[in-house]
Amino acid sequence: MNEPNTPTPSPYTRDAILAVLRLDPAITPVHRAKILAAFDGTPAASSPLVRAVADRSGRVKASVAAAQAGVAISTVTRWCESGEISSERIGDRITLVNLEEVIDRAKRKRQHPAENLP
Image 1 (cartoon, rainbow, N blue to C red):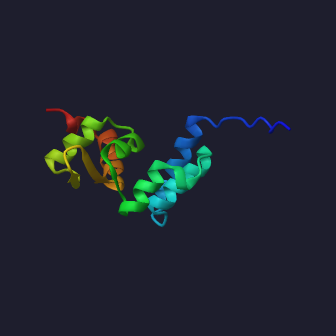
Image 2: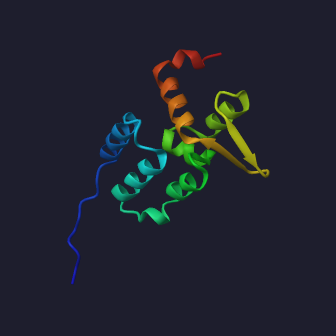
Image 3: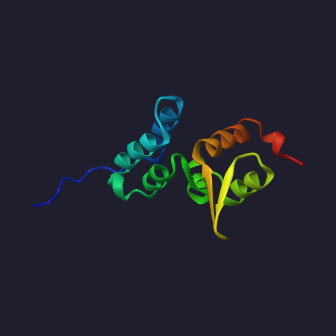
């Protein structure tokens, strides 16, 4: 028996849902990740973002935070090195950052692009 053909939601719909979730301070990063995983059709336990957030209470790999905030990993690395966001190095290759800090910094960057010029 074939399953019904369900339409794939637009990425704009996902972005709108994410924007609404970010507005509610009562929704934690873990809950936000679980809601997005459910929206994407990914079992929450297998979502890398949910596992990363759940394991470290809001701290995720810099690459995950960059993807969620819509900025380049090099930008997140630069913010870490300059002290604009807090970070924690684990070994030589992994940097953990606070997801909310990266998202907030990315919002400020978009609102005031002139402050990013030399």
